[in-house]
Length: 455
Image (cartoon, rainbow, N blue to C red; front, side, top):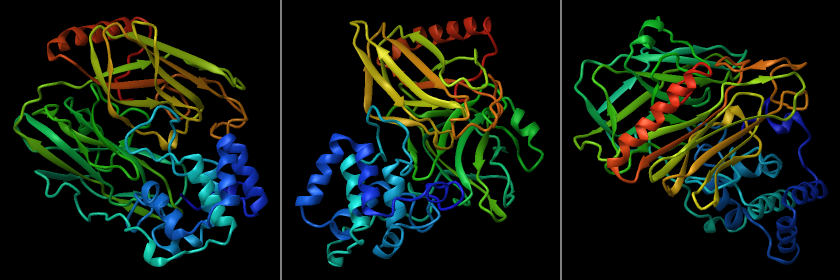
């Protein structure tokens, strides 16, 4: 929840009055809003100790704590009461906490229920009562240092990077050369920004081509969209509130002997000069992977959006030839993306939603993990449909007036990618699935430039 030029508190009036607050909640909540407001009228009063603190501790303080990625804490009553109207406004609009999908449910989900939003609104409108201080649940404890303990290998950006006080967001790649090493297996990875106030998100790749090291003269290189080398082998990522990435049993990630690490960091100027030196912790295992994670990328490079077009659609599909377990999903587009839909059509005709994002925001993209793997039988067709809004009505459109938008990796271009992280149910099916994906890639070369999964 950022206070500043880009927050709803400054871009539009906050909902300060109880009447406006009720109207805002009802407009968003529909029937659920009426039910919540009925509880408001007949139930006990809402207090910080009993009602508000549990919501914030579950959904917000992973970022909003001292040393977290947010600009202020929301842990104590004093922290929260002084921002009660702001909290009510941004949660009613679902601006905060940042969570893009509305279906299905994912692990570590930050999306508030309509009832929780109503509670925060009622508390702000009724004077922020504290309740019994002794009844506040224990606040989450955040470990200093590495959450998984001492790593087997700790590396960092070769030198600090200076972010200017203002100007556009920066997307910078930093090569981290590794000393000569044998082939290793990674059981866990953790990324820690050196300055969470200025780091919006970070992605970690391994580069076996040495291209990143050649491009990095010491202060990184510009890399909006793609890290600038192939193959771009993604390892992990960091967003505010992110956890260390621990591989599932038997699914360690391979770190190749010739690989360098590459950090792609999105910096957001704060109004003053900042520096960052992001670190990475690697945890190894001697256990060879028994199951191999693959990336099934749905994408389209046939993007040519006319100025003013509000409903431009691209689609793609792939039929999975073997039984698979889907662990996670990564959607990707740039600034004029509006809506994203991914689904699976099973051989019996049943359709399952893999992800639905009704209001895409490039600044809050991340990887999503399912609470339990999704089993898809052989013959399942996975499909994507992305919708773009290249009109003045799109507040995230970087061009006013709108300009023609083409496919490409630049900030003024667009992309369409939906990447499924999955494993074959039977390891013996790995070759068949790999060959099907290779054939798909080869066919795509006939219709445009191939971009590596993860871009």
